Image 1 (cartoon, rainbow over the protein chains, first blue to last red):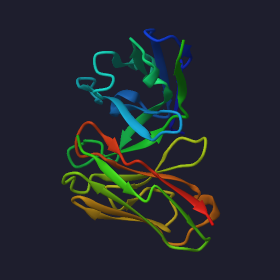
Image 2: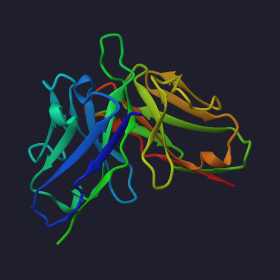
Image 3: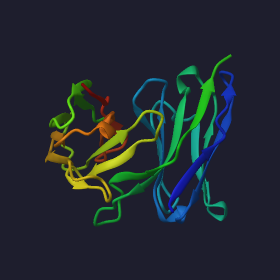
Image 4: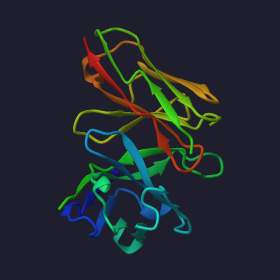
Length: 124
Length: 107
């Protein structure tokens, strides 16, 4: 069974740092483009970051650029999100998501597997 | 950035009713449009990809249509288990963006 399990969400003070982890099972992480998506309390969905399947390309939402870093460890089949200089507006449920439904050139066109999420609360 | 305008933001309908949600993109996104269902306390689930393709295992009462800037999501016969918030999402350009969501309830 294809599964994603996030961990690492805690309560952290403004300005603090945190690393989220996402353990993948049932598939090999480095065969797929992977994403982080977040959902603030009572809010909609916001794309945060993407890591291409070959590890060569990353991109970030403007709201987190320069503060967050996406990475992976192929030996652990795990995806990470390093979060620095945290702000109250970063408070959210963070989902690890697998890209899928690739087009004819192998670019994903949808998010087909979602983890259950891990909660980050930034508060003093 | 591509803005996704979804409407209505909420609706209430009876079991068996036909339900339609619309999503408009701020620029042409071809058919790079997906629909997700999020039940309370759960992660989103992919229902429709590339505007009109039904994800495996998803009931056929769900469907999607459209291309360019205007898209429609339909539940042909609303069931109690369809109570959820539905989101559209464009996959044409980064940053990937979602619509604001439509909360569907049973009347």
